[in-house]
Length: 212
Image 1 (spheres, helix red, strand yellow):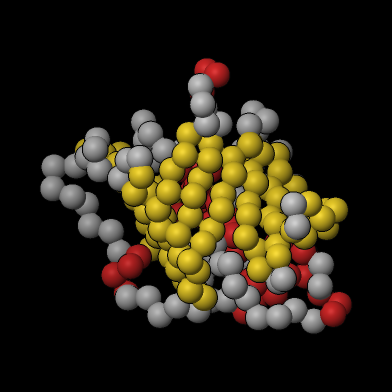
Image 2 (cartoon, rainbow, N blue to C red; image 1 turned 90 degrees about the vertical axis):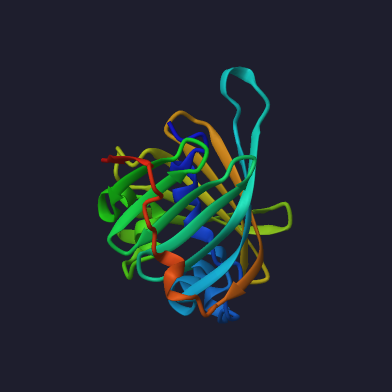
């Protein structure tokens, strides 16, 4: 088992870009800003912090690291603390690597993303095909957009993305067990020029490889 909940990290890539061009007046709401981000930011890199609910009444789990993405279908999510772990999508396959366990899980990208927002935001699809969207009341100084999956087996109940001045800066994911995971993104470089090997993954020598 990979220690970090990569499934929640996979959902988090829905809000990897924290900088987008100014939106027009008719798209000043959070949903409009989300649509603008999807159509105007082909790539980005930055840092993240993830707070997950602890198991069995334990304290929340905190992890942090860096990420990069290039639309469609390529992203890199690298956990540096408290354990070194890596998730890489090369456009066809998704690789989960736990360095301490020297274990790699390989999945077909389409099957791994399924009905998650990542399937929409890293592709070229319309989010309203898979999600019901609505603007939420402002909270904590942010404008919020809510995404409710239309599929009953999506693995999550709700996603909320918080924007400030046209920038998505926070993400909340409520999973199928009513547990909320929080993400904050910082140090973003939008439309970043990324090296081709950013999204390549080589199986480490001696690693235990599991295909799912």
